[in-house]
Image (tube, rainbow, N blue to C red):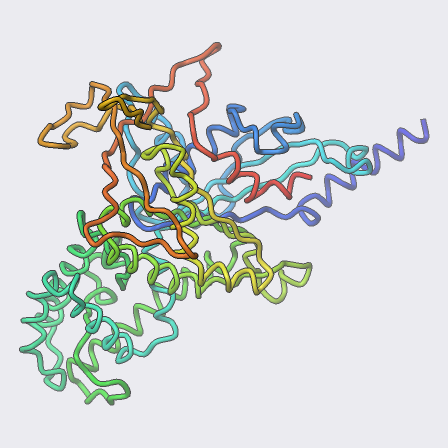
Length: 480
C-alpha cells in the first residue's frame, strides 16, 4: 500500500515535471520550392496517427508507441499547418498533390510511449511533443544577407546574373540597369520598375527547365503579404564595394530598403523561428537538378552551402535555454526517390552527399549528427521489370499527371504507364560527374497513389520510401 502511494506520488511528480524534463522538440522542415515539404509533413503525421508501416522507427517497431495525437497550436502568432486539408487532397478521388509551402506554419504532434528505462517505466507512460515548423527554403537563402552590406550584395548579385546560365534571363533587367545613375535622385517609379525586372529575372532562373537555386532575396519569389511593399521594392545597383551613397540618391533609397528588408523580414524570422529549432530536415530535389545538368547541380550546391552556414549545429545541454539552442541533428533528404529504381538510390544519396558535403563537414565538426538519405514521403510508383531486345530493364510504373509529356505523347492522368527512368551516374573517387546535357533521367510527375478506406472509416497508411528511417533519425532518441 505504501509502495503504491509512493509510486503514485512519483507519477504525479513525473507528470508535473514532464514539460521541463522532456521539452518539446522543434523540428524544422525546409527545402526549396517543389522539394516536397508539404507532402513530407502530411505523410509523416498521417503515418504516425494511423500506425502506418514504419519498421525502422524503433518505438513503433518495438510496440512502445501507445498513442499519437494532434494538440492545439502552441504558438498563437504562427498559422497552423493545414494537415487535414492537405490530407484530403492527397486522398481524394482522384488523388492530387497539395499546394506548396508559401509561408511559415506549425503543427504540434504528441507521442505517448513506453520508455525503455526501468525507472521511467515505473513512473508510467511518457509523452513527447513534436512541434513541426514548416517554412520555405527560399527564406533561408536570405539569412546570409545579414552578414552583407547593400554594396556587397549588389556586386555578388550582379556577378551571378552575368554567369552564362543566367545572363539571358537577366537581359531586360541588365538593359534597365545600364541606364541607371545610382547617384541620381531616388524616384519611386524607377525603383518599382527596377524591382519588377529584377524579380522577373529571379523567377525565370527558378522556373522549369532552369531550376537554379541561389536566388535572393527569397521573399521576392514568395512575397505573401509583403507584395508591393517598399521592403520588397529594391534591386542591386552596379556600385563598388564600400562606396558611400550620396544623400537622397537612388543608391541611398535602395540601400535603405535593403537594410529595412533585413531588419523587418529576415531578422524576425531568424529570431522568432529559425534560432529556436532543435532538429532540421532539409529536403532537396536533387533529381530535377541532375536532369538539367551540372550548372543546376553546382548552383544547388552553392545555395545549400550558403544556407547551411547560417545553421548553429552542435550538441545541446541544459544551458541551451540560456545561451541559445543549437540544431543537434540535421537530415538531408533527396526527395522523389520513387521516380527512379531502388538500384539507383545509393547513387542518389552519393550525389546528395557530394552536393552538401561542406555543410555536413561543418556540422560534424560542431558535434551535430548528420545523415543523408534518399526518400519518397509518398510513393507514387511501383517497381516492375520489363524486357527490351532480350534485356531486362528495371522500370517504374505509375500514372502520370494530366498534361505530362514524354516522347511526343501527352498523358491524360488516368492510364498507368511503365517507364525506364535511366541510371544515375556512379560515384568515382569521391566525385560524381554529370554530363552537360544532364544525366538522362526520364523525369515525369506522377499522380499520388489511391489510398483506400479501411475499417471503421479510418484511412490506410500512405506508402512511402524510407520515411520511417527519417522519423527515427529525427526523433527516435527522444522516445527511449
